[in-house]
Length: 397
Image: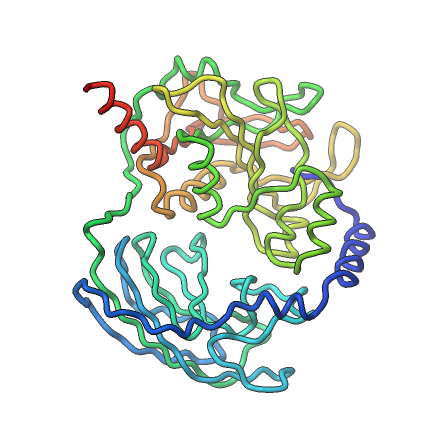
């Protein structure tokens, strides 16, 4: 749950932003076309296919199943035309304008009509910009889709021609693939005896369930969230309004609306992270709070968190005010977190641990109910594994 923002406050926020954001600033954010020539990879070419993307569609399934580490080179041309545009546009897309402030696009950091792609599950995969040319290494294994950065209610006419060449992975730089394991050393009931089962509000009323742990240093923790498309939440309302006013209304501008402070280990969360589409974030977003533990797991930093999914509003039973309603099946949010983070190539191991006397049903601090199978997700970050191996090697010398 996060701080409630009234309709009037949101309207003032929008007015302030429109006053301070100039069209030239928005246009400047349009990514430049990648025009450099790509060197032919030394690795073996596995396949080469060409696709025609119809301007009336958003996503096209290529049928190409990529493996983590494979290199993909895209080249594209063609033209689209939008009914309100003054000219045709190519795969670079249109320059961002004021109307883009209220559009919900698959990839908000690029203009309408830009050629984009994604790899993996449509529910969690993060789109990336292709434009006219792109040379990229696939971070995960999964199906490749090509897309046009547009809304279903505002499609273009015309088409793009896209050539996709896939090359074998560079075996000299293997990527980490998250492994599902039965257990992780140090994750046991002795550890959970030190971890409260629930977070609480300032008055000590118990709230959301602790449902995930992350093993890894702070930089690795921040990197895995940002790579997976999660956005760090602002600490207070004032900074949110200021940042939103001097930047375009991208996905990040909405997601950084602050969360209320909740407590674990006697202090507010160290980080808040959110994941959602813009506009609807006022009522709905995936979000979590995370705390650094004062103890470690086999010498490695431990982060303890609670993740929930805001799905609407309900009455706060403490004060009859309005608060956010969470999806009562909180295991769905735990699983969503697992999918988004493990798809980054930055998680080495994952497991689910069932603590002694697991929590399976309770109410939040505001009175909403939730249920769970009681399992806690545990993710071990790849950087942490490398550091642990180096430390062990050094100790054995």
